[in-house]
Amino acid sequence: MITFSICFVLLVTAYFTYGKYLERVCGVNPARRVPSDTEFDGVDYIPLPRWKTFLIQLLNIAGLGPIFGAVLGAMYGPVAFLWITLGGIFMGAMHDFVAGMISVENKGLSLPEIIGKYLGVSVKQVMRGFTCLLMVLVGAVFLLGPAGILDGMTPGISKNAWVWIILVYYVLATLLPVDKIIGRIYPLFGAALIFMALGLFAVLLTGGYTVPELTSLHNFRADAADFPIVPTLFVTIACGAISGFHATQSPMMARCIRNERDCRSVFFGAMISESIIALIWAAIAMAFFGGVEALNSQLIAHDNDASWAVKEIATVTLGTFGGILALVGVVAAPITSGDTAFRSARLIVADFLKVEQRSLWKRLAICLPLFVIGFGITLVNFEVVWRYFAWVNQTLAAITLWAVTVYLHDKGKPAVISWVPALFMTFICSSYLFIGREMLHTDRLTGYAAGGAITLAVAILFMLKLRRNDKRSAA
Image 1 (cartoon, helix red, strand yellow):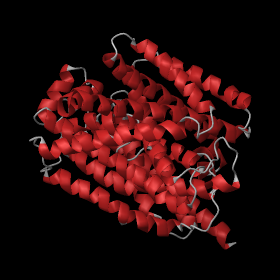
Image 2 (cartoon, rainbow, N blue to C red; image 1 turned 90 degrees about the horizontal axis):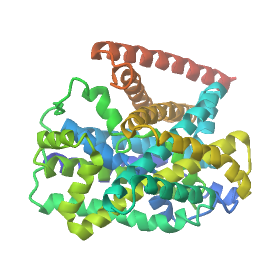
Image 3 (cartoon, rainbow, N blue to C red; image 1 turned 60 degrees about the vertical axis):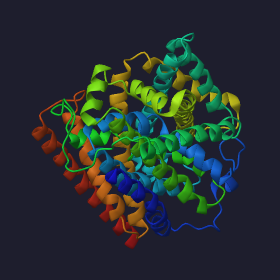
Image 4 (cartoon, helix red, strand yellow; image 1 turned 120 degrees about the vertical axis):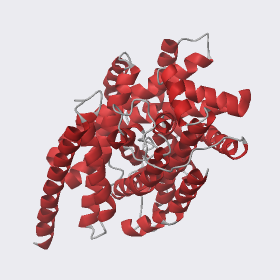
């Protein structure tokens, strides 16, 4: 429990220390007008209270990642605590906060447009399609995941029926103004998600469970040869540490915050909260089954079905009523991320095509093709979709970090805070492209060498770009 406690304290402390430092770096100015004021349209640009924007952001970014990802990441052992904590503070929270601030400073601009501003027009064109692909993948993954959980809870309603029910909700939530559905029901779902985390935290403290300690970087997976810690763990636990998907969600709340002083709570605070949720789920997963080896055995016996483990843990530790409430939080998190993923895709396409979004029929014209593609993806095997989603997600995080680095460099700020994470995530994503079982699946030495070469090449190209920027500024 010592490792878990230290990690928990570090995450909480980071909000009051590193979060405030990033405020100074980005130059948060409470007197500056925000997009909800300057661009108000009654649909996407609407001022909301800070507590609402925080809960909406938390639910937008949470999804299945800090729950399913943490449970599957726990199979690697206590090393997962290290990644959740250090990744969550110095990569994820920094990534979410600075990306959110950039959006606020640019009238709530969507992520591909922001990336294009700092990395160039050609990159922007690629990122428009790449980001839309991720949004539709997220929508599909977060449609299948909760449908699978609800299928086990409601014998009278099939999984396919739940897919259609959730899809209808997605259509409504994507089309209607942000304050009509999202602004009203998210606080309730947020309460369920927070209750779940607090309940499991209390169980860890009082339930007599033993949480393994970090004594080495040993990989506890039974199939460790196919799933090495580097890079696989860093892709498996995404949303609990760093996730490119988060930066696609930030522009929605950048359009709703009432003052720049809210940004630390909404962007940095939501990510820290998600890391705490992931930390709790990783700990309870290791402790509940009697250790990491037992967790691996149980998950292997159930086809690595994280939803089975989640339902088992919630109902046994929190009782029937508490388990139901906890599962509501587990189900609500991906559904609320799925609907905002499609909403983000709509905003990205609208920004790209410069189509105003006050008219319902224009919103519908953009949304319908996205929903058709998303439904088509649900027909593919869930495990396959999840793996590709995870890699695309982390690759987007790496690209966003490079854009953040240019932003900080051009402002004369210490760009090293994003430069190092950008290098790290570039290596993780490029080496996973070679080592990943669903990718090229080469041997580790080849994968690491190729990943290192790609990372070095990207770093050199990036340094040349920064030099060009400096020359243009000097001229």
